[in-house]
Length: 261
Ligand code: CO8
Image (cartoon, rainbow, N blue to C red):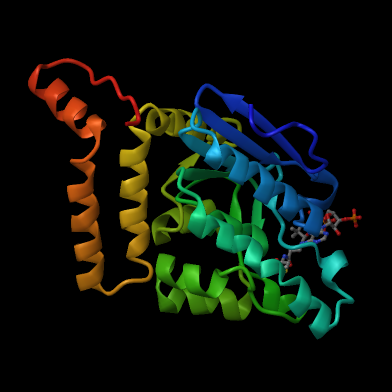
């Protein structure tokens, strides 16, 4: 596999054509210190570049997806140090990943952990998952896109309530509000994410990537420009062999053989 297993705070593993990345810093409930975010960026980018990997599953441990940025590491930093480190730029990586990323959230997804989950393309939650942006309770505000992505995911009223009060929501609420797409038992959620990732990875990579790019465009573009962008990508699929293969296979009543070409 491309990603090595020499990380201090991650466990990575290739399962067929899916890259599995598990944050593993259980003693700190997977708090995202600088080293962990650097390792995450490395693992995600390596899997994204690996042409044998068609999708990525991002998870944590039993008790926590991630309980946020590492408060102990941040606590005494000055404005200038915080600004120079610009740790938030880590999240920009998610705008560049082409492979679909499925978050399998067990336990706490708080602060930066919640923001990390929201930066993924699909979020599955365990029954005991809890989501929240409690930054105001420790004297700061979300800094990894939470104010922007939560608003888009659940609307202003619910986003404001969560961000201004720091209240945590249950998996059930998160599902009803549209933050997560499905809930599974704690011991099944990673398997469920791997299964969905496996299905996605069995499709044509360029086609799946174009679909992801088209949906993501909606976050930034006007409706008109988004529709025009989608149309261009739709037309571009006809430049691939996989479009010919997919449609010919349908007409011939057989399974398609994708070549990612
Ligand atoms: N940072 C550092 N350590 C943490 C964190 C964290 N975010 N969360 C938990 N830990 C540590 C605890 O300090 C404790 O360590 P120790 O045993 O050495 O005292 C260990 O993990 C276990 O935690 P608790 O004893 O607190 O476990 P509980 O079951 O009692 O409580 C909670 C679990 C409710 C999750 C609680 O730990 C908690 O409230 N954690 C903090 C949640 C939080 O406020 N997260 C937001 C952090 S701020 C943030 O994420 C900003 C994102 C933007 C950053 C942009 C650039 C960096």
